[in-house]
Amino acid sequence: MSISELAYAGLEESINRYLALDPNVRERLARLHGKVIGFEISGTGQTIYLIPGPSRLQFLSRYEGVPDCLLRGTPLALARMRDQRRSSGQLFSGDVDIAGDTELAHSFSNILSSMDIDWEEQLSRYTGDVIAHGMGELIRETTHWGRNTLETFAMDLQEYLQEELRLLPQRLEIERYLAGVDRLRDDVERLEARLLRLT
Image (cartoon, rainbow, N blue to C red):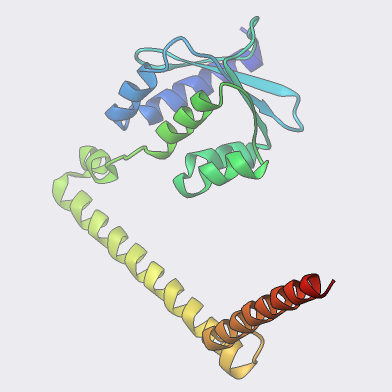
């Protein structure tokens, strides 16, 4: 077995262990059984072929036929397909090119982005329920605090840029500007109609 075959085998085993953390994902992947999804990684000249099976994903470095769908992109763009908020944007922004069955590409992306792993349950296997629950609570509180802090910072920054530096217009100024644009457009249309009548 070559080094590259060992790398593919290791990658396949790691990904399948990760997917096994959410039993629903295996079920949904089994519906794609028999399909071949190719990932062409820009800049490397390598293509990885994934074949969803009834119980696991199979990884191939070579595939003789034409895959059902082929996704091309940088490693980062392809990795972002797992992010639910970004996956659709990736597919439509041109960061990831799709050839073949686009519905299959979207289904696969949706399956990956919908993974829901109960990390508390996974941790409880090693630490027990009480410690795992305490750590879960701490992480949730920290995440909530971080999100609130970011939202507050964004609002403060917006207010500073609008009120203090006057770099950004306020909502009322934008509304007035848009209303002025609408009035100007209507005036131009009326003038155009008058000119047509005169001629």
